[in-house]
Length: 334
Image 1 (cartoon, helix red, strand yellow):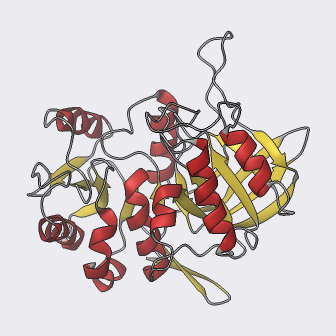
Image 2 (cartoon, helix red, strand yellow; image 1 turned 90 degrees about the vertical axis):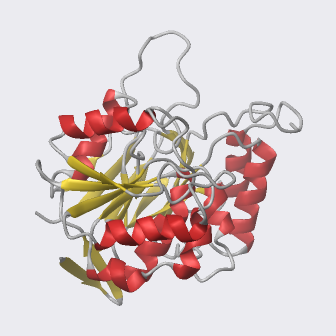
Image 3 (cartoon, helix red, strand yellow; image 1 turned 90 degrees about the horizontal axis):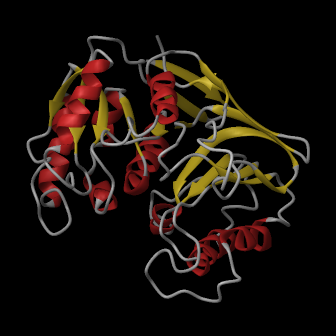
């Protein structure tokens, strides 16, 4: 266990995964869509030389949760307490993770530093664990998503299986020259330079934790935000709440992901005027903060996503010439 102190901040880094290690599969939110989906996960883990253990209730169902809160919590605690398990891999997001936080055993987690990685609904767990224990957690693919593209797989392995700084974050190569994906990967909303520890996740979950003991801490941080299937006017609501709560003006800089299926009408919910876009919302809400803001980076709900470690030091340079994001500090120990 490596501890780095910066002022009063205590950072705990989990050991990197090695071939032969065992990982634990849990479902703190929603169960796999199809039980057979787990077979893909097991095969891809085996390709990495990793063994696995699976929580007892991963395939349980109670509403849209993987079993009752007590069952999901039991799996999470038992997998975390297992000395053979070196990483805890939620199988997917969905709904229900925040319900577990009041009963979560943070002492157990702090005493047994392990890799924890996920996104979407898992944001609640990532933020709570990181802020309560100082453990570096990872916003990245769930156990059912790390093999969705070569780009995603590469950054997943790089983040979890080597004890080195991740360095410059690259973008995926476009699959075709025509009809490029929108938004471009690095749209500068506000230019500037910043340096700080990374924090963030899915906006819906960041907002859900506001006013709770687990609400996001952003002062002096590089904050990353993304979401999926939200209408632009709802992105506006979430950013407005974070602004009113003072959670963005005191950040060092802001990175906004591509926000998959967030064009007007794509959510299947009520759409406001079609001329109003996520980009327009971000420019209006965040463009005058006086800190660098970049939109469109590939983390979150897209098939191509890089893994972002919460708590490590990173730097951002945004100008009309380039956008440069560098993760300067290792997220794991050897």
